[in-house]
Image (spheres, helix red, strand yellow):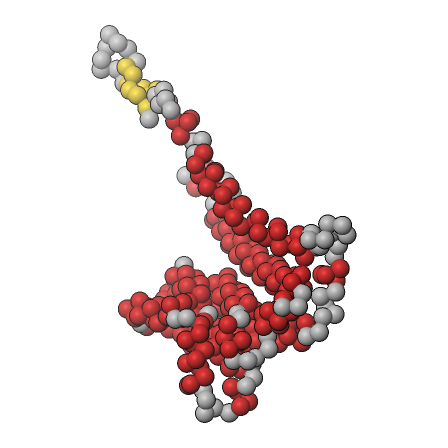
Length: 305
């Protein structure tokens, strides 16, 4: 804020000059973070990290203080019966879930944004239904709906892949919807189609590269759900890594806790990778924009006058 001050008090017709006004009292105090917010952040951090620390300490032998901390449970996890087999099964299910989910949802979401934007609320409501329906109800519905299907599907991991695609719809819809809303989709698609590109080529070479971060986020969330889902796999009597973890926990709690921590750290690593890729892509875009602005400026400023 500035204040007007006369240059000559005897001549009021003289031009006025601006002088900076004195800062208002209390402005410096407003910039200080409130104590209540910091305390709330500490409470949430303690609520999250204290159980995590306790679990990690338990896997390192914290319950056996006379032996000290050791990595014997972590190193011996690979040699547990069924660990490798069930882990590979869950990884295959997660890969199939992510692949089928993206193949179905990316073209559908792009078409929804382009041709049926008025239907987005209805589709969003349908995609959010798996969050409101209990997993037990979904599993019983699957058993009733697919009872006449071949045993190769109902008795294998394919039934879980189809089910996990449905369960991951809310997260996939949110991620892809945010990514498509952040780009000028209509302009990009119309430009590509006017240059002679077909719809599959436009989708693969124009739409997908511009929503890679959203696709990666949807894929990671779908994979995390497939790796950690227990209820439906247990009700369908299929052996996956969470089911094996529950069975191992009935015999050795340290082994089950270590397996759970392994999946948790793996999910964190994937999420950090997606976040890093997103930041790197935004930094690259801003760098290119700065280079374009620099190249558009004339070398000699006087020549532009």
